[in-house]
Length: 204
Image (tube, rainbow, N blue to C red):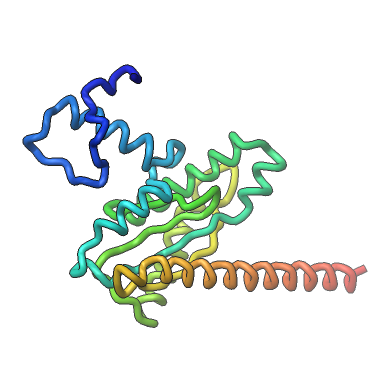
């Protein structure tokens, strides 16, 4: 048996909410196990298992849930050119940003460069989506004024989960929107680069 886990009941269900009257050693050990299972060690955000736990414990009156999905730009490029320590530092700058922007909301790392922030009891609409987008971009502009090795860049998308059954479908819709937005951004960047090259050529 692993040291520090001798107080754990082998039949303990980690999905069962802990009670204030529970044995303290069990509480401490269970909290440690919860972090080992559900938490991403680099970011401190919860992982996909944590997301499943979160979704399973949402109450009907906590819907609709606004799903805000982020995908970091340039992470692979940084990892390939400068190594994974530099990539980890870039990820941590994103962590700093979202912790400032969403201090009280749950945050999940879904993959290497993909993150989710679900916000309970918020119904999306065009005005709200526009306001969220404008706020994110203005906060990002201020954030990037601080001296860092790399400017923080990401693509994001917004969707709404209307019910327990719709939660993962909303996540899929968010992902499709984010991938589409990333393609549009890449095409715009390529067009801008092409225009610059044409302008430079015309000046010769």
